[in-house]
Length: 455
Image (cartoon, rainbow, N blue to C red):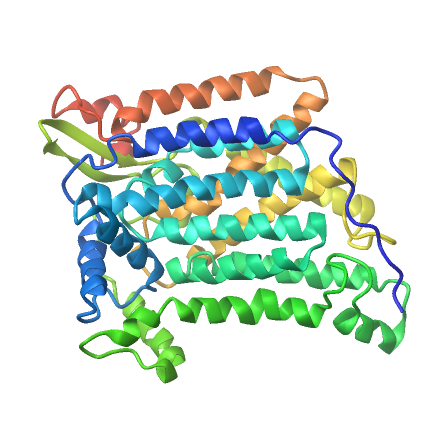
């Protein structure tokens, strides 16, 4: 029988929820301000708006290579606010705001670092990518915001030890898959963490008994009363069922309705359709280019709504570039923590003190790699910079963690400089993030600093 293991320690710093809410509120105001501008279809909205209209009419399949949740959100916006630019983008914008808040809360519950949490909130809100994707009617925000909600609940499950948070984590993992498959590689981490934590909880048992205690034992952490077998249901089977549920509207199409008995077979068809997109695109790029912010995309650039306007999908130059050395720091810090304490932490499964931030730093680096791994091995030749969305979040986390640790060591100027530079960058680029009026047709030269940004 395993011995009870204490839950993780409480925070020694006050919860920065007010600062987080203030940042989220500012982000929300900027996202919803002139959301319907430009009033013309941007970039891949050309695919997803007709697909949403077909969903509303339940007429026939359109854009069948992707899951339905993102298109369902677009359709819901049209049904609520009308088939107009504001209606197209409303629920993506709302979900983007919710996703930002969820990511901030996930960081807090994982780190218990007030300063790190506020820095992360600021970097994520101003990294450009999350902001621009919240203002366009495509599928990526449905995936990313759902995943942020899942990670929030995962962190709460670890911190509070309550079954309900595991259930909610699985729910949002399923919804994330229903937006896009991009976040699937990251969804293995909660299950792996739970398996490791249960192994730690059974440390006082040996032999075959430990294997049984590991699989069906209910005493000790991380969620008392929830064995590994049950956790596998909430973090494995339950998300798949939620994902399949997002296809229910397709079962009522007037033409070729989807049979519930062919859901698994349909996933294979979707994969084949995605792999069939091989025609080169002007803005196509590769994952290693995203790391260096080297291949942005003009979602929109023309004279419309009475002025020259543009929407550039690019990362904040400061946080995207400064985040790379921070990521290396975090990877090294995580390795050092592993060498210092090892994977086995007798009597507990939640790192404390210095080990907590070091372990989280290593996790941020690992999740960054996991977010890029999908694209590195993906045989799909047509990829775009906005697929860096998830990796950029963990890059922001790495930068925040490094600055928080430097601050604790008494080195504070890097934090102030980072805050100033990231805000200046956001303000400077804001006109071509939010489609504000530009001086003229050559205004793109003000923002495309590098030759590769102009092509």
